[in-house]
Amino acid sequence: MTRTPSGGDVNADIHERLRSEVAKGADLLWETALELHAHPEPAFSEHRAAALLTDALERAGFEVERGTAGIPTAFTAQSGHSRPAVALLLEYDALPGLGHACGHNLIAAAGLGAALALDTVLDASAGRVMAVGTPAEEGGGGKVLEVEAGVFDDVDAALMFHPGVYDWARAPLTAQVQYRVAFHGRAAHPTGNPTEGVDALLALVELFNVLTALGRRLPAASHIQGIVTDGGKATNIVPEYAEGLFGLRAATTEELEDLTGRLRAAAEGVAHATGTRAEVERATLRYEHFRDSGPLSETFAEHLSGAGIGLTPPAPGVYLGSSDIGNVSARVPAIHPFVAIMDDGSDHTPDFAAAAASPRARDVLVAVTGALACTAADLLLDADLREEAWRLHRQTGR
Ligand SMILES: [Zn+2]
Ligand SMILES: [Zn+2]
Image 1 (tube, helix red, strand yellow):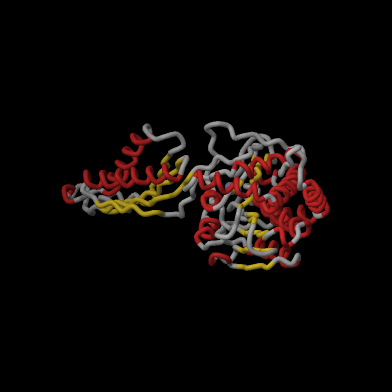
Image 2: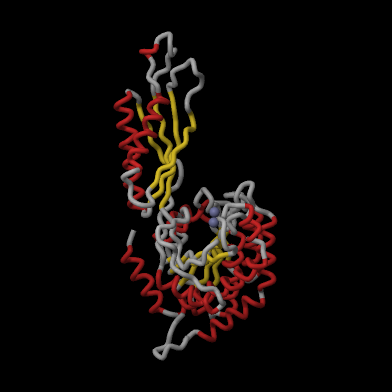
């Protein structure tokens, strides 16, 4: 919120009009959230959701591009020109078998509502408002591809919220990537000519042992979780090939790179010791850790507290997984606050899916949409806030 020297809110009138615009459209927003909830679509299959959202934006006069970054279910919608520019991020993928158990239906509706309110209230001279449809957060990393395609190159900030079980001003999200490790040995009959065999599965098992030893010395939040994806074909053949998939997480992208180096070194070491050959390859896009923009998340928290929801810093030492918002936050100042739609339990559960269509979710949706719109307006109208956000963003660096 932009303050006058006497402590007043210089954009008070704009904020008031944005909130009243959101209140006017609340029924329609809630319908959109419920419509998405009733037709959950998993990563990269969000055709119905993308059509629903782009149609609403196009009807309001936004200039819509579909198929952004080569992803059929991604889009951008713009109103206004050049800079300053603010991007509202809309997630809308669901979880296979669980529906909207991560509440992305609310993220999409909030981003849509904020974009529409800003378009109605702000002069075109205020800058550019962009709604970015970001598919496949739950695996696939639509935002990673969009960052690489330059979608955020001319943007001053990226804003979104995520429903949760906490009211946290910023998101503790780790960096994450998966690697496939394969060992090549030599097949043989285990009793007929055992000395001829080179057991690739035993090499893979040895890698698990080495990683367990390594795990004791890793920094907080660094973690490797592995599964066996190919352990041989029959018990009367020494496995000539074995393969595992390893999920790596770390508090920062730099620490994740370090962890990746350790996995490679461990695989090579095991291969050397067992007479096998190791192949290590990246199996997914890399999600970077999330860098919160303090000035923007504080602005958002202030606006949301005006609607009766108070946000606190996250509990120390707790990490809530990883997200492709991390890659956006490495590119431009970004926010990803959590706002509770239930008080305990966890997302990715049937209970959370039910909460994402509950009366409480409706209240949260309206409050958050207003706070997102007001934060976006502050960013566009207040050059000092923008400069401060960029200054800190450059300081934290890559
Ligand atoms: Zn999720
Ligand atoms: Zn999510």
